[in-house]
Image 1 (cartoon, chains in turn red, blue):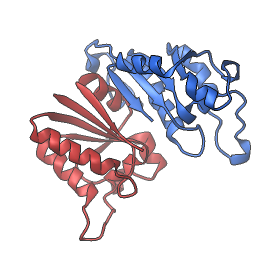
Image 2 (cartoon, one colour):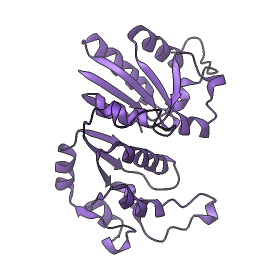
Image 3 (cartoon, rainbow over the protein chains, first blue to last red):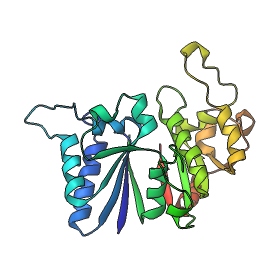
Length: 119
Length: 135
């Protein structure tokens, strides 16, 4: 199945991004394809390359980056939500890209299921 | 193509496919940004010629209440935008009866024409969709 994912919460404060990540990994292991992860609302913070969690904790930003790279997942950060929250190209982690909400709608149209992770 | 649509040619990239999209609004209009940013998605979605519906449940019902005055909290009152949705061919707005009544609201208190449905009917509406985004 071709899946799209929408993440509406930032890292660490909420579990949404963690659950989405674990869901994506499990889906890939089962042979499904994640074609895009769209980061919206505070979810845009999941792309902030300045985030440095304690070394004994999971690195939410970097593991999305790795999953995206390993499985050719399009990691898209909403431009309007990002600008509102100070996420710009200069602090955007490599592997993510900033684009418009149309990418989310397109993901809904193109994928068999669009799964939302939020509050 | 435009920046707003993410550089997507709305015709070409959708292959003429029309899906049923439902945007579920569950949160109060102010206090958090969810309602405003949800509305931003709906407005962009209108450019894609999809079959769009909106649902208002729980505190989300407050998003479409008349007479919102936000000046004292220095936040933009975006409720008039719901009235503009008609111009984008977005006319299917559903309000859950139980949520509305639990908040002491009547259909007359709402800023736009809506269809009031009970929880079971709302469940049926959700069941009939292709894509549901909940904010």
